[in-house]
Image 1 (cartoon, one colour):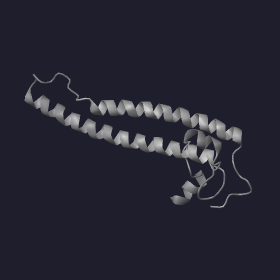
Image 2 (image 1 turned 90 degrees about the vertical axis):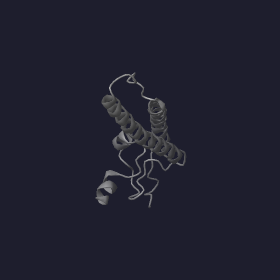
Image 3 (image 1 turned 180 degrees about the vertical axis):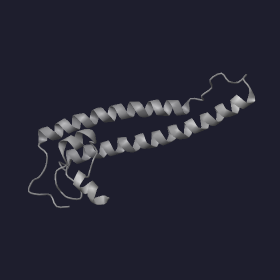
Length: 127
C-alpha cells in the first residue's frame, strides 16, 4: 500500500470518528448482551402441559432460535472486534486509508461503515 503525500484525515476528523466508533462499540456490546441473554434463556413459555405435537414444534423452534442467536452473537463479536481494530488505526493515524489503493476512504462511507478498510473503488475491483 502506498500512502499519497501525507494523505490522511486530520486529528479533528479522527477524533470525530473515534467518538462515533466508541458509540457503536457501546451499542454493539449492549446488543451482544441481549443476544447472549436470549441465547441463555431456556425459552420455556409454559408449554409443559400442552399437546406433544405442539411441544415438538416448540422444541424445534427453540433449537433454531438458539442456532440463530449463536450466529448473531458471532457476527456481533466480529463487528466489535472490527470496530476496535478501527480504533487502533485511529491511534496510528492510518484510519480511513484504503488498504488497497492508499487513498482516503470517503467520509460518508466511514460514517456508515466506520470499520471499513476498503474504498468503494477497491471494493468494486474485487468483483
